[in-house]
Length: 204
Image (cartoon, rainbow, N blue to C red; front, side, top):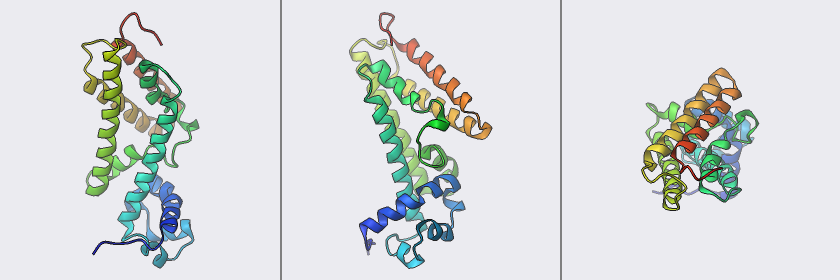
């Protein structure tokens, strides 16, 4: 029998109220008591709108990821050219501590690290998020290649993968060392990578 939430507005309230908890403490580290404290709702109210804690965690992940996508899209939309749009994906993470990301940072990194061996559903969600991001970057690069902004021999998938690996790796290093400057250095490296795949007659 399919689970049906009692109230979509209450369900959304629960998601927004607990999204930071799951992103900071993780699925395993977030207890039902934490959800009750964050929402000020009873166990019955929470489980009347979600089948179990995992369902809340998945919805919270989706919400956090949507917030990050909105931040990236808002930044990308500020620029007209393909080089600038591609670099904008990295610029979102520049001076990471000052960026209005979801509480706890990047949900892809957080969920991916935690769920690798513990939660297959969440791992798949994180994997889908990564693959979607890679696809978007590769498409952007291919559009730039078609308009001679990027070199014709550029491997779009490889470049997209490298950019994401640099961003996510930089986030992890910045978080562990608590140094936003480290992430800023990674962003500069991504800028250099974009320059290397660009046609010589093009400029930022």
